[in-house]
Image (tube, rainbow, N blue to C red):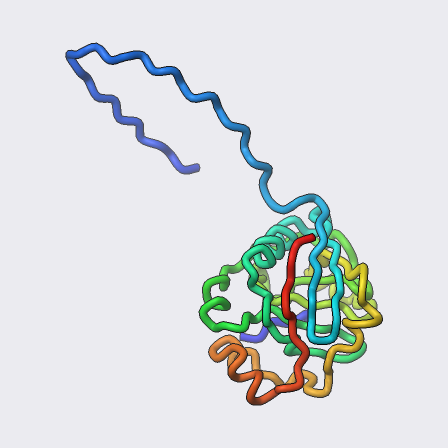
Length: 206
């Protein structure tokens, strides 16, 4: 399917014994780790065209920021292609090099309220309807404020390399790459049919 910018209860069992038991001290409670990603974090993309950096703001779209953090930490975007590049609109990526990896992360994410407009350079999850975000994201190549009313919640902003790298990603294939084929065949399909696509070498949390 194409994605576009367009209380658990616990049962406690007690056993009886005729023999006295040594009294055990209860373990000191450990502080819970804060949920989700940091409030603000940066991701460096090293690509075939050069490096760029995205700064993510969790307050803009908490669920999206958390999912993106987990994907980057897992290496999901490494070797992934920029398979949809529409000049003066968006650059889209987020189908893994390996079909098995794409399938592993095919878990729908509930929507975030739109907390920041889709201005030029912002990064947003692609979707195909309500609560359907998974792994695909896009970078706005212009101000796409019309996407705000359609529920596209930007979660980050390109802060380095927009003009030098993102704007120059190979765009001659446009929207020709088939998303279902990428999902099922991964880079083997893209390398054979669209060999000039730019790609991500590594994506890492700074």
